[in-house]
Length: 133
Image 1 (tube, rainbow, N blue to C red):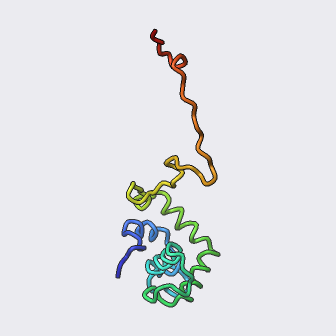
Image 2: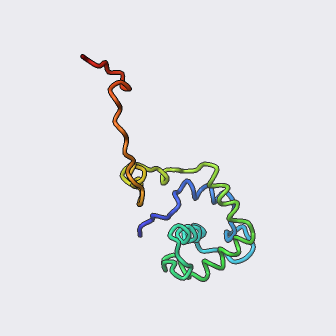
Image 3: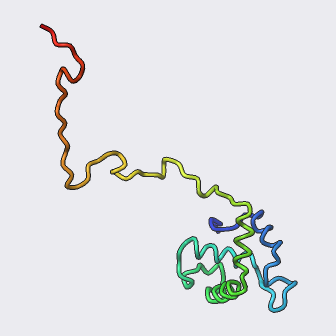
């Protein structure tokens, strides 16, 4: 399985230190895999897909949604993102010229309906050239 949307191990260790719900120390049902759940939520938002289109390897989409909703109401996601923002990894945000394209107006192209401005040639006296007899 490609782990394009997965958390790195160091990021996950920082999140585990928060004591996320669903672990053995919390009251209620013990979650089978908190990391898989967090990765499912990140995948869903990064890919921009509806909950129903969540790939099956993340589990039942409805259970992931219900759990996401609970964490939202409890403010868990605020803590998660605050923890991850302490040491941001901007590697994914690096941009180079192979993926950046300038709009044609950035190169000085004329806009539609714009006429070409004709310039009058400078006279010899205005340019500072001496007239010869």
